[in-house]
Amino acid sequence: RHFNENTRVQVPAAIHLCRLGYTYIDHIDSADYDSSTNILINEFKSSILRLNPDLTEQEADLRVNDIIQSAKNDDLGREFYNKISSTSGVRFIDFENPDNNVWHCTTEFACENPDTHDTFRPDITCFVNGLPLAFIEVKKPNNHEGMLAERERINARLRNKAFRSFLNITQLMIFSNNQEYDSENVVPVQGAFYAAISKDCAFLNVFREKNSYTGILRESGYVDILKDDIQKQILTHRNCIPIRLSPEYRTNLSPLTPTNRIITSMLSRRRFLFILRYAFAYVEKTVELSDGTKVEKLEKHIMRYQQLFATFALRQKLSAGVKGGVIWHTQGSGKTAFAYYNVKSLTDFYAKHDTIAKFFFIVDRIDLLEQSVAEFAARGLIPHTVQSRSELMDKIKDNQSH
Image (cartoon, rainbow, N blue to C red; front, side, top):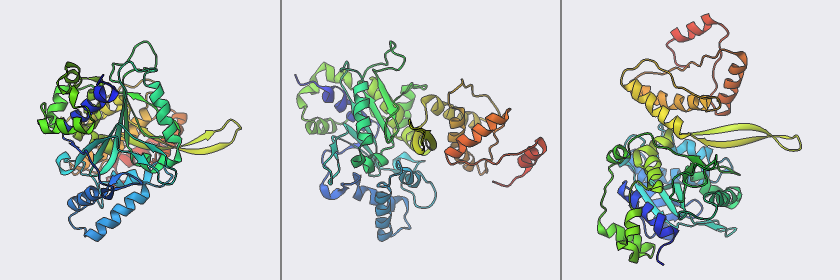
């Protein structure tokens, strides 16, 4: 009688996050966070001062207020994301050194609009330097309708303007009923999924880890056995101390459950930093409505897992001195999006080697050229086109950055 979705999935997931280096918070004082965004104000300010030692306290306060205001824009969080993902100017996150950031998680932390009194409580919220950048929603295995019902719930929240500032800050959403993906449906309805935010409908992606979980856990600093007081803290906070000695609870603590696997793959500290820095794109689209009217629509995209591992492979091969290679794509698999993501990733990669990178996209058809230019432009990347082979060779020989 003690078991439900929280004790079966939520509590073990929170404990797994702590094993990955997060610190669990069982109480957040009203004076410690901004109720319009759920940013942990004191933690965020102290992180700004730590990462930017030349800033004064007053300047740090201004940065905190600026971030809070940017989260309230009706821009799908684009300004907020551009600020926190930047590596120049004032830094809010250290993307190279996980230990130079502060990692917290908590459960049932309410997102509440004081004007409308609309409220939702993510099962688990994950903070980086006081910023609530990810949340996890869990269901018990074999729940009715699988994750379809959960998708409808999150879509209702995405459409509710009362939650806009909270969702603008949220970079990653994970949904799981702690089951393996079902093979009976073209689109799985059981399993662990991830998504970026939207203004209307979340696209739930599957995640299939390519690397060894043993290796990821080792690199993440995973601690297999938590101190008793940490487990007790979480169990007490969730009011479920009696489950501690049960076999079912111990089974659900395994790092290899579907929920804990996707947490390792996407929220282990170094992996999450990489995803935050390189795995998102804002895409401007022209959409035709049913009455024929055309409107501009902004979408936020996140890398598919195949694109993420191809990005890792590119960096690994280049680090090993490989000069060329092929990435095999199928039709509609996201070649242009992959190229966009890797302009950013490889620019930073080469910058560490004191090299200014230039990227050339060579196509074999005019229509493909026009399509590629439009797709890059929709993501904010404007390529320069050339009209001849000689002009291309001149561009290649030119050692100036453009």
